[in-house]
Image (cartoon, rainbow, N blue to C red; front, side):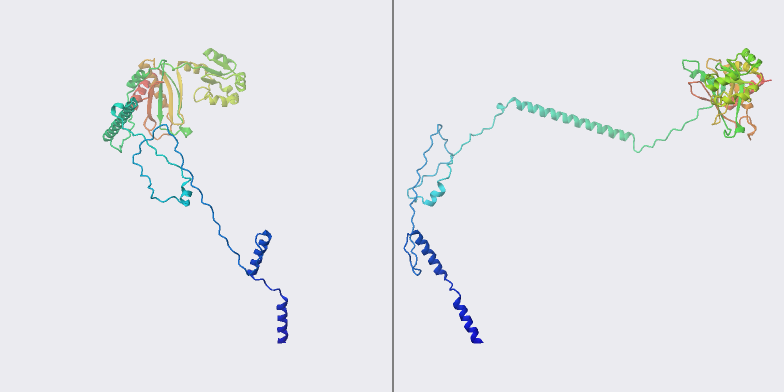
Length: 406
């Protein structure tokens, strides 16, 4: 078996082609190329290839550049030029020429000498610049001075009024109470309007306005007449209507007048409305319209009565109605500024007497004014209010009661 393996390996070795050596391939390649060119005869692989030396000619020196003629003489250089090279220097080689032949020629450059200008040579622009600088300096000095003045003023002000400053609020001091005569005199003096101002009285009551049984209302006949004329409308029929016309009523009518007001044809622009008891049931159609304008006839005010003529006579004589408002205050006009002082005094006295008569019975205080009348002020239409002492009003009301009320 081993002998068989040895025989097979030798047979495989003889069957494979022999590898050519690299030296043989190189020599064969060179021999082929030379044979193709027909320049050299075929050589055997064992013979070496001869190498022939190659020489190049020396490159000649270029001629030196000719100097270009210049019209102007060149300035003398500051430093003397270096001495020319001596003949002992060796000649340039090929390597030197290769690096120097393409170098640009550099000519020396000279600059004119600069001289500082003298003061006499300055142009007017320099003087203008100095003037501008001077004006700017003056402006800055003026601003600094103004700033210092303002700071000084603020410092002085701070020294005068130290901070924090506690300012006590001024209390509203009540004006002193005046006697009735003196108050009337000042009201007439303070009336400076161009028309005849009305003298008004304002009474603050100590009554609870929410309690209907404590309401204060009434009428008073002023001795010297009411401050303005009053227009009157009367709801009546038949003989009572004729009587109202004779007494001086401005508007008189019955059911037809009520229908006109309800339909909107008649606006009923009057100050007072009177009605007979027979016409009271028919006023329901216009009750809301009359209440909005405070014209609804009322038995307590004397506007719902069968004596129309007597009520109209009293109204012409100066009857005035008063009624407490929601803030427990009475407002009423009692005359004109053109009235005499005594006439205004008597009208105010009559009003105060009527206020005492309208005092509610449910008040606990037994005195006439204690707890009932808190304050009274009188004034003109455009003038300030002046407080009046309760004592002087009480005396005036007592005098009026003695002289006019039986």
